[in-house]
Length: 324
Image (tube, rainbow, N blue to C red; front, side):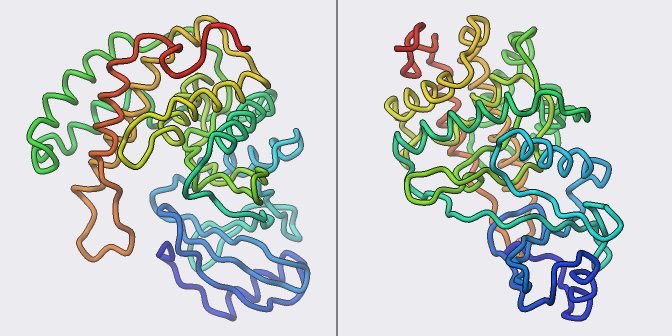
């Protein structure tokens, strides 16, 4: 479970009191998530989510994340909104960790997304990209293309423990991506981690987006590529063209992509697969045996990468050059 820092009843009651949210009724650790400690907190004024930021999150980035959520909420994107304490701050400290309270978002993430879910996520991602315009703070993508080779070199000697042919595959792909990475694409705020567990639904209606702790400034189309990887592959690692088509059509209903973005999509999708392959492989090889959170199998992204290597145009993702 994702509770790394325990909080006492007394500490939490004092913390909640500083926010003027009424009396603390109950709180419970949230098992999902791998980066931070999360609790659902019930007070006489309703439920809230409490996050304690652990060591993998840079404290200097927290104003960006929290400010972005407030900015997006103000611009029509449904997402958790940071709560300000009596001193007007949306960031405080609890149990020796930076901590924030955000509003509770109703809904559940879907385990078996349909094409309709994918279309809704496409529209929501486009709204996020448009809503992020004008946000004053900037954060570089710490897991962008320039970071991939240094990350790979940290586990390269052990790559064969995952698969005998992983090292030559990664080395060849890094060489290609570093040379071919698209330049000059429209940029802005991206989510960078819009996987199914970061999107909530109530029935078939998308109720909001969560977990902005990889958000940054980068090419908007790269965010589309990350989401294609996250939403449009089946459990057997086959690409679902119907879902891909639905996702892209939903996105372009709100924000049509430029011809340059369309042409770049196969390479961006390869890069998105590589980014998650590398982080999963590193965690797979470096997670302690007694860890409470199990890393995800990097071989899933080896298969996705090999699919993208064969794609030559956006039409192969299920969308023609003209949205119909």
